[in-house]
Amino acid sequence: DGAAAPAKPRRAPRKAAARVVPSASVGDDGAVTLRLDGLRLVNVANAREHHFARSTRVKREHAKVNAALRLVPARALAALLASGRWVVTITRESAGLLDTDNLAIAGKGVRDAIGKALGTGDAPSAPVAWRYEQRRAQGYAVTVRVEVAR
Image (cartoon, rainbow, N blue to C red; front, side):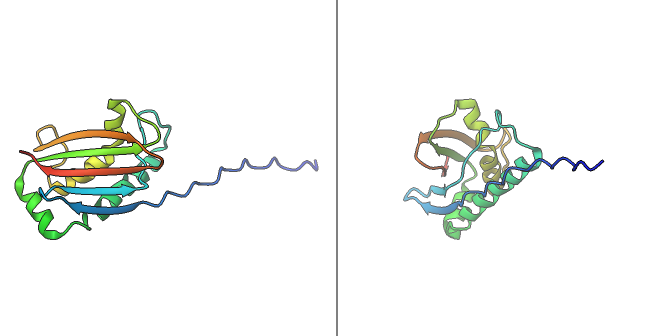
C-alpha cells in the first residue's frame, strides 16, 4: 500500500520564561524589601500544570528569591536574622486579582524560599507571621517585605 504514514501532531512552541529582575532595599526600620519584577505567581489550585513544569517553576521562584536576598547587605541581613521573630508580607502584582485562599497558594514557592532563608520553614509553630496582599498592575511582580515582629 503506498499510503503515507499520518503526520505526528506538532507541539505548541514553548513559551520562554519572562525575565525576572531582582532588587532589594533596607528601610530605616531595618525591614528588608525584595522586589522581583517580572515574576508571575500562578494560581496553582486551578492550573493544569504537569508536575515537572510545576517543579521547574517552583525552583525558578526559589532561585529568584535567593538572587534578591544576595543583594541585601550582609550586616542588614544579619541584624534581621538575629531578631528571631518576623512578619513577612508577600505582595502579588498582576492585571487580575485572586481570592484570598488562591493568593496564599500562589505565594507558596516564595514563602518556602523565605522560610528557608530565615531558617524556620513555614510550619504553624514557626516564628513568622505570614501576610498576603495584591494589587492591580500592568505587568507581573512580587514584593516581599521581611520585618522584625514587634
